[in-house]
Image 1 (tube, one colour):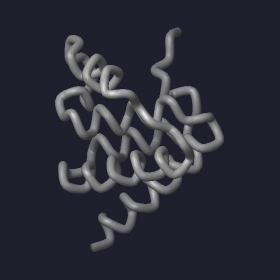
Image 2 (cartoon, one colour):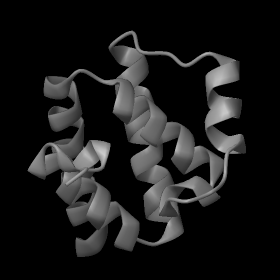
Image 3 (spheres, one colour):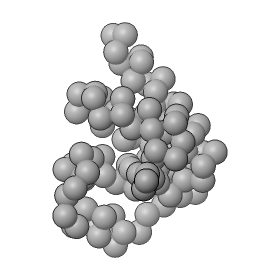
Image 4 (cartoon, helix red, strand yellow):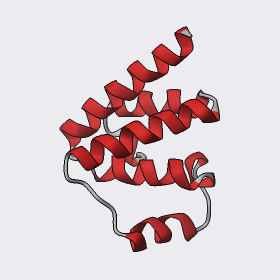
Length: 100
């Protein structure tokens, strides 16, 4: 069975699933957190990758919004340990937003 890139790690998969079910404003906060964490760790996307990633057929739920799609491209490029750490941060942010 082919797994989606984020299903390889259960923590990352949970973060993506919870983010999917969040409202758009909370999704944007999570996206900002992912991009910030990526840049802090020296991960950067070239303009072409971002544009190419957004211009193909929109098949995934996060492809419909460029900001969220870009954040997921950053998350996908992260090393596994950083991906998991970021996923935990996203889960914590989502729990904090839910508690408000």
